[in-house]
Each structure stands twice: as C-alpha cells, then as structure tokens.
Image (cartoon, rainbow, N blue to C red; front, side, top):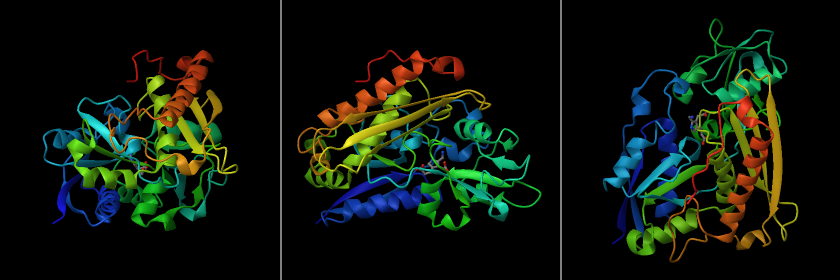
Length: 348
Ligand SMILES: NCc1[nH]cc(CCC(=O)O)c1CC(=O)O
C-alpha cells in the first residue's frame, strides 16, 4: 500500500494550483498517496499593504509551523516569498521546474509600458516593480495595492486602475494569461529573486532515513537542477545584500543553453532607488564545467539536507556567483541607493 504524504499549502487559488502540481508529481511514481492540507497564514488574514507589513515571509510562517509540528510532511511555497536565511529544522527538498520568471503588464486597451497614457494609474504592491516602472516611465502614478491575483486583475477598470503588474507565472498557473498585454523585458524590469519557482520544504535533516525512500526518491525526481542553481544564485545575492522580498532588488539567473557541453550560469541583478531615479545593474557568469545532463540532484541518495545552501559543487558555484555579484553591487555603492547592507553572517 502506498505511503500517504501530507502536503501543506495556503488556501489561495494560486497556492492550490501550485500544490496540485507538486502533489501530482510526488504521487506519479505510484509509491505515494498525496493528501493536501490547507493551512491558514497571517498573510491571508491581513489586509494592509504588503510592503507595510514590514517583514519577509508573512505567507510562510504558518506553513513552516505545520511542518515543524508534524501536521504535514511537505510544504509548498512560492520561492519568491520564502526568506533567504536558513531556517532551523527545515530543509529545501526540491525546486521543481521553474515557470517563465518575467513580470507582465495587464492593462486596459491593450496598453504596454511604452504606450500607457501620460499619468496612467498602475497598481503594484512591490517596491521593486514600482521603482523599475518609474525608471522607465517617471510620469506614471503608481498605486500601492495588494490582494490575490484575481482581486488585482479585477481593479483594472475605467475609473480605477489602468494597469497592474503581476508575475507571468502566477497568471499561467491560474489560466489567466489572456489578461496580459505585455511580457516585460527583464532588462526593463528584472524579476524578483526566485520568481516563477516553487520551493518544496521538508523537516530536517531531510535524509533518506528521515523522509523514507519513497518520498526522498519522489523529491529527487521532482527537483530541476537548472531551476535550482538559478534560484540559489538569485537568493544568495538577496541574502548577501541583506534584503528581503520587499526590497527594490531584482535578480535573474539562467543556464545558458547555447553550448550544451560547457554550460554557464549567468546572473543579472539590479538595485534601484524607490523612486527609480538611481539604479545599479551588474551581471556575471560562472562555467559549470559539466554537461547539463549531469547536474542532477546532488543531495541524494544519502545527503538530502540541509539543502537551502546545498553542498554539491554546482550549488557552491551558484552560491559563489550570487555572492560575487552582491559584493560587486555593494562595492559600487548599492547601499546608498536602497536600504540594504552587507550581510556578514555565514550562509551555512
Ligand atoms: N508576492 C505574491 C506572489 N508570490 C508568488 C507570485 C506569483 C508566482 C511566482 O512568482 O512564483 C505572487 C503574485 C505576483 O507577484 O504576481
């Protein structure tokens, strides 16, 4: 008889679809039954501006508590919303294949950033999006909004907002790509670190012994090394800048596909002032020195955790890249542009 694995999720439509995909993937080998457990989070109860809530991870705490309490075995998060600091007792068990990480504009009248009327009202709760939008179009009236994806889309109407900015990934998962009027070039709006990716957390130590062979094998099959390395580089950058998900920091890493036998991991990053008037952009690459097909999950069969800052040589390269770009930004004056500073604590 298959073992039952309890998967904790927020109860929002977006979280439920994301968790549904993970549940299907984990049970596809036929050795596990997935049971989905809804966990209420403070983020679902609070109604103020997200940037005014003041901390990172408002959506995360309740899920992690359920994991630590043993109420669930696995927790599924949007990696963008997961704090970068390692959490005692919790390990990252898998990063599933990432969706398109770009931001999108959903506007009335088919407008794009370039064609929005002068002074148009654009909704976003994200300082990163606001700052980059103002850098491109200083005339726009950026309105602080929050709420779930449907609520935000619903505000695009005559007399209210002319447009909102959202993650393409969320709209794709909800089947709402029809609302998109522009997929924004990352050179104009660099996405949030981890955007479009999920993080599947488990209780530490996350070894085969603690998880059981079936769950450990299912997590290893679900993990996408390319996505994992990209988000490790992005999240390390964010960590080293001592910035959270509400900071005006964008980061996008990807594995260059043009030379399959000599792949490189490239990271683009931006730190921008809240009004968009000053910004620093930096970019760098590392050679991974191995064919992509061999980047497979470094953490199995015997050493699944701690995975947030994992120990494979490739993970270490991704982490070194994130750290190098963060150092470069800080050396170039990033702290004077945004409210960030060097983090000295050890990652491990
Ligand atoms: N901050 C909320 C949030 N967290 C994850 C997503 C979208 C999906 C993703 O980036 O994985 C969203 C909505 C949005 O930013 O449009």
